[in-house]
Each structure stands twice: as C-alpha cells, then as structure tokens.
Length: 259
Image 1 (cartoon, rainbow, N blue to C red):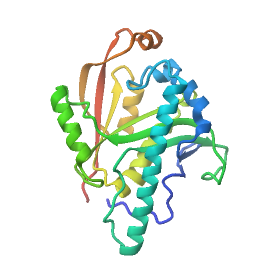
Image 2: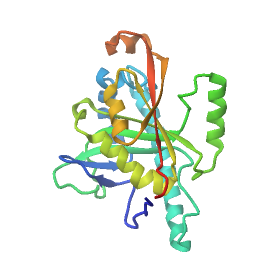
Image 3: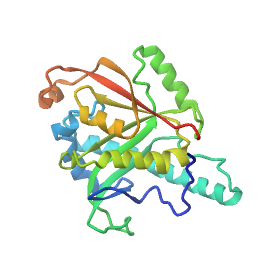
Image 4: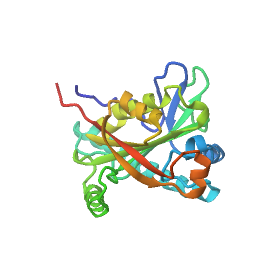
C-alpha cells in the first residue's frame, strides 16, 4: 500500500478519528503547564515513565516545554521547506525528521474542529518521536555506538530507527485514545513526510495496557530487557511496585512492504 500525502493536511493542527471524543493534535503551549504538572505528579502516570522526574517540578516543566517547543518549531520550518519543494518539483526530495516530532493531545467539545487562531483546547497528553537510543541493546558501549550512528543519518533515511514515548492524564486512560493517536501519526505524518520505516516502543513490564496500545498499532514484541530501569526511591515508593528494578518490554513497528 502506498500512502499519498494530503495536500490540505496540517500536521500541527488536526483532528483524528475516535469513536466518542474529538481528539485534536497540535503544538505545545504554555497554557498546558498546570495540567502537565498535575498529570506527571500523578503516580498512575509518572510511575510508568522512566525518563520523567518524580516529583515533577515547575523547573522540569519549563525545561521540557522549551525542548518540545524548539523541536516543534524546527519541524514546522522543515515542513515549510518540504511543502515548497514538493510544490515546485512535484517530488519528495526533502523530508522532515532531523530532530524529534512532538504532538500535544487535546480534547475538544463535541463537533469541534481543528484549532482556530488563538483558541487552545484542553491538554490531555503528549506523544513524542525521537531518534532511537536503542533500548534493546543491553551492552552500554554498543548501545552508544548505535545511537551515535543513528543520529548522524540524514532526515528521510529509511535506516533511521525511531523511538516513541507518550502519556495521557489518568482520567483519559482506557478510552482507546492512544491507539488512535499513534496509528494516525504513523499513517499521516511519519510515513509520508518523514519516511519512517522502523519505530521502537517500550513499556514497563507490568504495564500491559501500554503493550496493548503497541499491539493495536501493529507493533511486534522484540524482547524483554530485565531490570533495565532502577526507579529513584521516591518514585518507587509512590508507584506501589513490588520491585525497584523494572524490566522493559521492547516492541517494534516496521513499514509494510509494497503490495
């Protein structure tokens, strides 16, 4: 199956299909700060995110906001160049993807459309794609070598391995939102505009709900890396987990061959 990019598509502001909610993907905004802090200090969310500090402070949020805003701004500049190139040549010579892709997940009122100028719908989560850190490689030296080589590949190279990470505020768990978001981004952005061929997702071994998200989006199980993450004491206490050292499951999506 060949995916044809949509000429009217805005990857920084669009509505995705969901059976009961109006889910809108857009860019980071400072008005999301309070909800983000509340979400990531909720053990139901923060305890399952290995790279997120806990407790999550205003300083942590400020750093992450600027990181994601810079990444989003870079993606938008790449998008503008890509559109200009395709309009002038009719080909896909340029690709996005020199840095990470970030989509903020929002929920709109019934019947809501993509965001109008100056309007921000409520924040309910975030999904990020970045060049992979190869979590499936357990040897630290080999992992670093693979990560460095992966980072050097030019945007659009089909050999790039990407990682995906995401979270939703706890009130929206179990509603089928993340499979809809992840599958939509793969189809609408990653494949036609970034030429993504391989994508890695990881989950804490006890977080089977996250594993099911990946399965619903066509990921296959690669391996379980035992005791891959050692939780800081405060996060371990808040989590309620039985063990401080957590194994991670590694899942991989691959672009289907043309039929």
